[in-house]
Image (cartoon, rainbow, N blue to C red; front, side, top):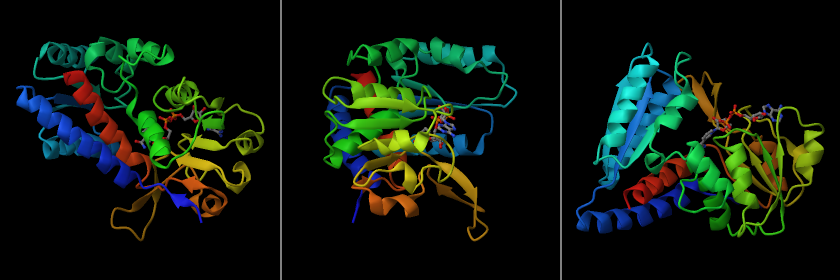
Length: 287
Ligand code: NAD
């Protein structure tokens, strides 16, 4: 039977560590503060932003939610970021992705003070990750995946890892973390143009799926005894649910789980870790 890696439980451990650190900082008169900027009305983004703000409140963090209309201009978003860059009560800033099409997301990310870039998307933090300079911020989702591997006791050193997906949010930083000194995996990044994907994935002791296609990774992609981390969060129609949809990962869990040594479920795997690592980054920013 595979180990089902419980992201809710590991996230709760991370948040318990955070609670201690927050208490320590507060005793020194510092309340870590996070600002979350939402531009437009993307339904998934609204849910993510609300849960981030709610988690801050639960932990006694200061948080500010700034909502701009879907017609907001680049200048308006810049103005908000610049105000937050100057605000001493705000230590972390994130602009929820994806913004509406008139907004140049990369330019907004570059405008965030790298010392407040708790998403870890600013070029300075991307460079620090590549340089293995621990003073930067690591993107929350891949950082959460690494923590899940550690919590499940998965040895990465010398192991073959295949990361499916090359996004700057998940795939690339995940690959950098796995290959870094200390993790020491041998890493392949696969993507939409990769030939013989199933064959490439079958080499892997560890498969990380960050594709954005429901149930994309099948049994043929997985070697017996591999560890599978499913980053995917996809909404698929489900008339039997009140919401009309259910969440599903990038891995066909039913088809794959029995072949694995350990696997993350969706929901309840990587998802809860992202927010926990965001809180951790906010505390680091406050320090
Ligand atoms: P993205 O769309 O930016 O990247 C998808 C990647 O998949 C691309 O690099 C592409 O090359 C690759 N890909 C697409 N089709 C492929 C194919 N046929 N074969 C191989 N590779 C293929 O997506 P993203 O932002 O990296 O997110 C990936 C998934 O992770 C999505 O489901 C997203 O919702 C989810 N996600 C979850 C969290 C979380 O907190 N758990 C955070 C971020 C993203």
